[in-house]
Image (tube, rainbow, N blue to C red; front, top):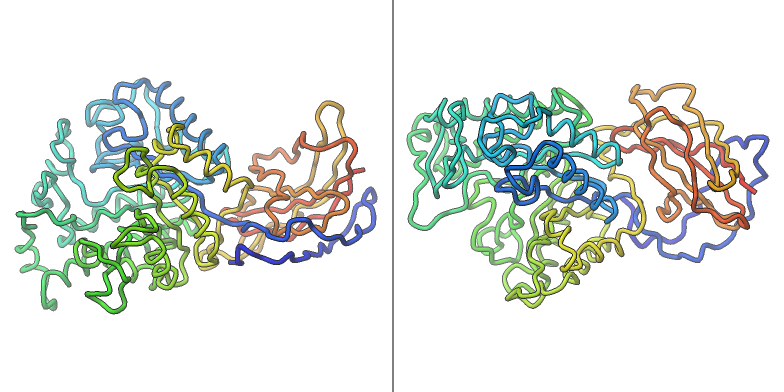
Amino acid sequence: MKNRKLLVILVVILGQCTPKSTPKQQTSILQDTEIPNKREFRAAWVATIENIDWPSRKTLSTDQQQNEFVSILEMHQKTGLNAVLVQVRAASDAFYARSNEPWSEWLTGTQGKAPEPYYDPMRFMIEEAHSRNMEFHAWLNLNRGTQRNAKSVARDNITNLHPDWFLSYGGYKLYNFGLPQVREYLVELVTNMVKAYDLDGIHFDDYFYPYAVAGETLEDGNAFKKYGRGFDNIEEWRRHNIDLLIKDISDAIKHEKKWVKFGISPFGVWRNASKDKEGSMTEAGQTSYDNLYADTRKWAKYGWIDYIAPQVYFAFDHPKVPYKTLVDWWKDNHGNRNLYIGHSAYKVDKESKEKSWRSASQIGKQIRYNHSSSDISGSIFFSTKSLTNRSLGISDTLKQIYKYPVLQPIMPWKDNIPPNNPAELEAKRVENIGAVITWKMPEKVARDRDEIQSFVLYRFEENEVINLENPKKIVSIIRNVGILSYADNKISKKTSYFYVITALDRLHNESSPSNQFFLK
């Protein structure tokens, strides 16, 4: 990925000009000497457990649920985001129809009760996200059988069908990951979801083995006696169990659909340097490796996941876990997988005890720091509710930073073959519209036979250098729904323009450019 502070790179567009095109334009110097990165993952978590983000209440009708979700997408789109991570499995329940687990209590008020009128929420959400060119990542909680103090547990909840699979801890019923049948169940659940839905990604949060609770013991000793042969201690065995689960899920996703991304957002601190010289110079009370038995760094290093998004929920001036210190550690420890940073938008509060969180400026400072490094490919914000709260100013901050549309970061280990370029680009002025741009599909499909998902339309004024690395010149990213035209209503009658269009596949590999068309 290219550094955010690129010098102006002149991208010479080779290719045929149509008869209506003029000769190549004269080279000139762009006024913008700093070009923003053209690829960035900009996402928000949409939490469903206990109705944190969506739906806002258990009692909403189908229409109300759908209207709320559309409003969330439209708000995020206006903010400049290009992906949502929606919690579709909060506690061994389902916000989707094609599941063997019961409908979620937080969807309909009673676990096991279907929406009325009936619909498939996840299918609806995916279609709405895709229609706005936003990625949809299905966010699953892995460890909860039931939520703490659960009031609604269906008869066919897995904790009732297989009570021997679960451990009671901290008021929850949690999966015993040391049991092979538990891991098989979870792998099958993810596999079926990937098969059944047009997902862009599968996403897990930070919950593996539980955060330690004072005075309680995790009673998985019997499973360790039965399955822990070859391990010196129960801690190593627990980490091995999670490694097996992550690797098996990774393999299953790749087998079903090569384009589905697998991402994990762990607790931000892998290990403190005081315990391991390879850890970060932090003083976190609990860590992923030592307390959650999740060797998150290994998963990125070995390529079992496609992106890692550590939850760096700390301010720059945090006394024990400073933002910069932890982010810099992850810059050196994400292997060759994409690194996104999880931001704690929920901490922004005018009454916060931490001065740094009393305004949205801390979030802005963090994103700008991310942009200074080519190792960081995006940000995810927890959670949607915090972004919709106008009084906090977070959305306004993001709008200022995310002014220009961007493409998703590439993942060449999954696919590095771009589609063929669109052809016969033309544009004409139309009264009361501006310009109507048309083009044709490539004559041949790409070598890997992937379909074109979207088109990227660029516009340059007559005296500007055509530089396709500059996202400021993207007019629109247009979903391929078979309509090969676009109305550009943001042009001046007194200015001449060059248009260029490219194609994107499912993993945002970008084609070479079309012919360039000159609009007088």
